Length: 536
Image (cartoon, rainbow, N blue to C red; front, side):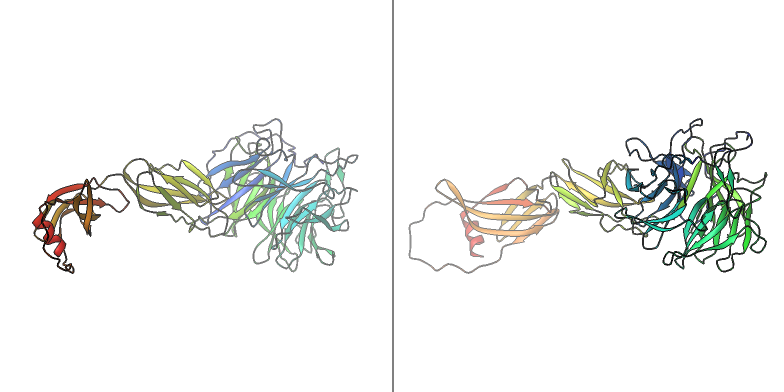
């Protein structure tokens, strides 16, 4: 089926600035599924992400290295794990060709990688997608293999398709939403005639069909009739507010957004669509955390389309995002809350010797929406996150020179929100130095260049080797140190022996906190002094 939203009048091209012009205070982002065009600036299907807080518009995925599954993306939803689910029509069906080439494509919002959830079977032209609280995917099938529209459920893990309902009140359906009471709401577009495809529906200007997924029972919740409000003009997108009120996008007519009472089906106008409004050809809608509406518009005033913000309840409109470099006739839109993550970084050890590994650990970082984080590292302290760590929260690095710096980690959630954490690292490659080693009576003094653990041996020369006769240890401070030698039990006296000349020395070595060892400091010690040190 060919896309029905074709302009019937020539619109003057007016390229608007690419910056976001309106944004609610609560953090959120919008994903947009763009269709395929061939004569404008972006001649291929593309998934975009708009951030109203920053004004950013970034490309997430298109056919190429990320995959080759897009043909005609028509609607989009965000799964609980942050991945994107795209309903793609494949080649539009015709009365003579209803090939089952529709598909549901999963897109990684970080890498843009495309993967297939399900395709074919019951899917010919899947036009709308919605997610149940348990993650089950509901798809509204616009055509059906036998020319009968339907609603299909898809298991997100296996891709298994199950027919929920078909035919009945369904006529040219495009939008689907899951109501908090568990029922499914589907929009019927109503009559359509582009000269090639002719659709005649029981309700010319469209309707909302309510479906019980358990009993398969269908009923008309609201349609274009005096008893309901007479506002429908080809309803397309549909969403449900947390309180249960239903919002519907009118593609045509003087009212762009209609609210519908969930119990009575009564319609009320929320925002207009006249020649003086920003909205031109609205498609789908998403709800922001603040309760406002984001509309995708197929054309706007530059023929490329974009996003329009509608503030509720006053219905005021503003261009949220428009860019002829990336937008190419957007259809589906999905809004997802996106609070920034929290970054936490620890290092171990924080003081390390040259050549020894430091472990950087950001595992205590978290995301308010419990999304998986990815990690980037600044391991040289220059303020640039030059090392990509993917989804692993730890990394190790050794350093070859003495330095003190602040390392950093940047954590980013799947929807682009990020936070940074830091921790100090000291790499110590300087050996401690012992100077001014002296022995005076029972006291040993020396100077240290830095705090260190000092070992002092009293050594005696036997033959050609120096052997320790007493070992003393002390935690030395930077500067002058004093060590009083404690007394110890005297050895039993032996009979008189012939004295022989004996040589003694003191040898001191310091090892700092990270294991750097000082050069040895040595001092000749007289026999009398050595005896005093050994007696004490």
